[in-house]
Length: 247
Ligand SMILES: [Zn+2]
Image (cartoon, rainbow, N blue to C red; front, side):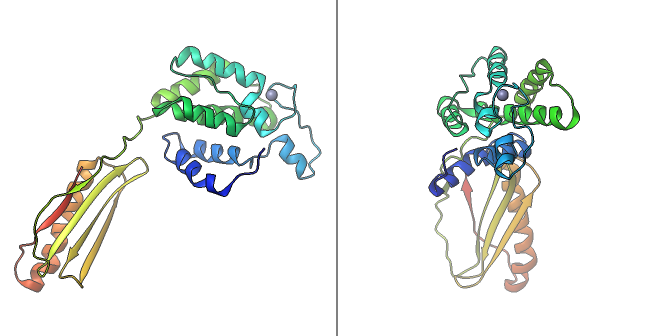
C-alpha cells in the first residue's frame, strides 16, 4: 500500500468517525485503510510462516487490498448487494484507498457507510473460517449486511449557520449565554453566566441522547437553576438577560 501523507489523516478520520455504522465497523475501516490488520501478507512481514493465501477465494495472496478491494468472492458479494440496494454504484479500485476514495466520490448520505458493513462482514467471515472452521454462508451474510444497512439511522444533517439573537445588553450587570446541540456521537449544552466582564461561570452539560430542542431547553433549565442558586443570592434579584443561539 502507498505510504500515508500526514495531511490526509485528519480529513480521513473525520470522514470515517462521523459515520453512523457501529464503532467496531469504523475502527476496522480505519485499521484497514492504514493496513494495520493481521492479513496473511502483514503476518508474513512479522516472520509468521503460516498459510497466507486468501481464505475466502483460496486463489490469491491475502493482503489487505486483496481481501477488501478486489477478491473475486468479495466482488460477487458486492455485485449481489446491488440487487438489494439499487442506489449502490460499484465498489472498485486497485487498492483499498482508491476504492474508498471512489466510493466517497460516487455516494452520499447513508450509503457512505456500506463499505464499513461489508468489510466487517468479510473480516468476520474470514476469521470464522480460520479460527472456528465455519465456512461462510454468503446468502446469509448478504442478508445481514442489507438488514444492518436498512437499520442505520439517517445521517445527521449539517448544522445550519447559527445567528446570535441581536439584543443590546448592559454587560456591567450579570448576563448569560447558552446553547445546546444534538450530534450523532453525543448531545450536550453549555452556558456562560457573566457576573461582569471579568468574572463568569462556565456550565457544561452532557446528555446521553436527545434532540436539539431537548438539549437547548435542558441547558436553559440548568442555567436558570444555577443562576437562581448563585446570582440571586449575590445580587438579591434575578433579572438576567439571556442570549441563545437560534438553530
Ligand atoms: Zn480472495
